[in-house]
Length: 374
Image 1 (cartoon, rainbow, N blue to C red):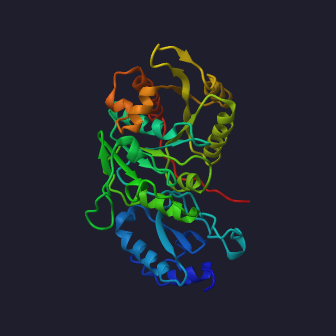
Image 2 (cartoon, rainbow, N blue to C red; image 1 turned 90 degrees about the horizontal axis):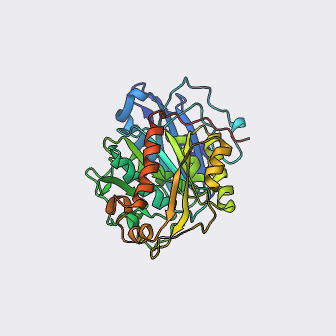
Image 3 (cartoon, one colour; image 1 turned 120 degrees about the vertical axis):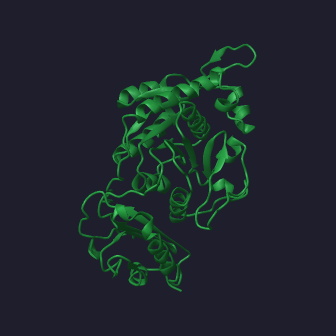
């Protein structure tokens, strides 16, 4: 069996009809983007924002049609809301060699009921990003905001352990999942759907599909802010979030030493290049506090993230110490902001959350940018 081609997928989609016009979604030029890679297929369908959930059956029909193509391993269809007049779709000669169609216009994946989405990101692993994301979400909740947490780190989901929750989420209709709840937060993670020690051996398109489904097919309800714990780095998952999700901003996490700041700079520049506002940088593990004498040691140096924020012209959101209480409570599934809210360690996270909440007041969600690969 040969590799799946764009032409095969488009031919299958010709049988999918937009109900109001009665025309094929292909003939009416609603195909906004198409990815075909290693048997995994993802299509974006541009629709009127006012149509809303009325076109859900059409989206499902598109997924069914693509899944019927011989050789397709997974099929995902996304409805995207046009925020600007649609441009002419690219011709076959204009398609990039990697098989990904250039988006016609700015688009965004709608997440009903969610007012703001912020990404917590780092250029590398091991900087405490997930611990920061969980405690930031709890801090925002303490600021009076209805808050949710999406654990988007597909390869290393941490939210179930950090929040002490497990078990598969329920689905009231067999189509959408109800998020789990911990300490008042609504939480979704791939970690709820797999065993903790199961490796995720997924290629890029599968990761992208999983992220889209965890955003689109979850009953988030009404939230003031959804915190997204991003995977480390600047790969497919990060670009999926930047391209298809109306992010209100990004928080960059780094440790003080130069090697971490180099990677943090890459993550920050990625968001700037795709027009996502950077709300600021947090210096995690900024200093070590001895649990016996209370003495302070700057194990990884100190102030590097503050200096980098000043150099790049973004806000410095605060310092979080390397402290035994943060580690032990995180391992126990009792994050410090929830279990010891009056401690100095919780205060450090709360200070970051307060600054992020203030930054969100002036940050409006934006449609995802048009990205052209040269």
